[in-house]
Image 1 (cartoon, rainbow, N blue to C red):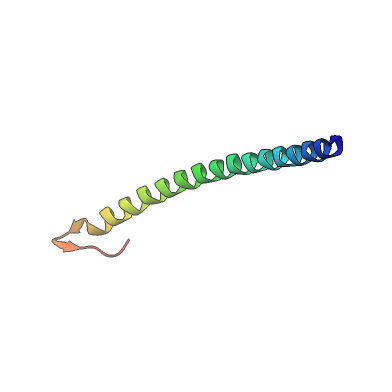
Image 2 (cartoon, one colour):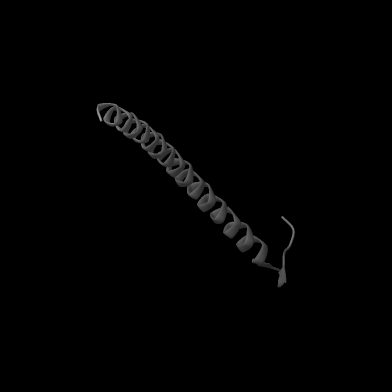
Length: 66
C-alpha cells in the first residue's frame, strides 16, 4: 500500500511538471501571437495607405504607378 502511494505521488509530480511546461509554452505562444497581431495591424495600415495612394485620381485618371 505504501509503495502504491509512492508511485501515485511520483505520477502526480510528473503530471504537475508537465502542466507547468505546458503553461509556460502557452504563455510563450501568447506572446508570439500578440507580436504577430501587431505586425499584422501594421501591414494592414501600410496596405490601406498604398491602396488609397493607388486609387487617388490624378488628372482625372487613376494612377497605378508609384
